[in-house]
Length: 524
Image (cartoon, rainbow, N blue to C red):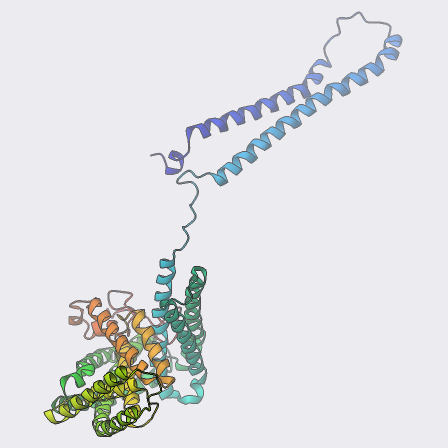
């Protein structure tokens, strides 16, 4: 068969090359003939009668010198010209070969990136950096438990630096989505800034990963201590999971279903992670007994990741129970404080200039909200956090500028919303996209700035988007749990990096270059 390179060459190009070669050869032959001709004629007999020796020698010597010099000049010029033509032809062929656009001969430059391409890169960078930060934070809890704060300070510092870079990247993306900046070139530069910040976050974590491995020595003498620490945390969490199940049943009896909704299914998911951790801890023990330190380290890291996520789920149930109790106690004080705010507003204490109609509308709305909350409290189980949220928002619209129970209620509600969204994203990060993560980061910033109402709104939106992402993601490993219990949950939670059919390597402290270093092969 004829290769694509040959097929791609035009026939005329081949003919042109042959003609140039023939010209070069012909020129060289002519030059050589001119050089050889005097030598060939020097020995031929002269047909002219020979004169006396003395006379001929004296008269012909100058003429022979002039003739031989002239005979040599012309062939030399012809040879140089032929060589010049041949070199020029070769140079032209080289230049044409470099600039030829025939398919299959020269690669075509890739097209320029479009704004959509830059946006896709930024989204992927945000998700990757956020995953790296969360995974690093999880493993660091095990390292601190075993070695203390002094020896782990460099890793904590690197994690905080990565969190700062990620927060800045999220802020840039958030402004970009809001249309800031407006100039096309500046918007492209903003996306480059997002990618650069995320890359720096990963670099900071990658730089400390070898030192953390050197401290833990999971593939060597440090494995035994790490196993004991992980198993101790696992046993503690097993007991807390049983208690959380009882707590959840109590919450269902005391409060409305909407109040318990944020943690519905948490206990079951925690049990699933613990089952996965049980299998991996056993595998790690067996690998350690056979001297396979690398495989044991990978299995241990998978177990640690599952235990950390089970703790997040169980803690979420415990935290919600505490907040619901605190909210139920705060509702009467919030109602009283709201009544005082309404009285102040009626007396002209509103800071925002409002028309009489607008003020009356807001006061009527607030009165309706307070009346509805009072009725709910006496009708049976209700959602005290939602009641506090409605009270705080009704008072906030009046803008009296007073602090008190309504402000405390707004803060309690906002903290709960941010924590709930954080928990959900943490244990479902294998499916959650960038939008929910960015909104969560924005909610945390608003909460830190004492803007509780805005923080609550953003956190709730983040949670809704994360739940939507999980529903759309589905289960990428249907039926896999029959052979590996808890595998689907581990992949969904980002405990395993989902790079292979068996779930891939365990995620570890580090950036994109090092987070998957603790891979393990399935047991034969």
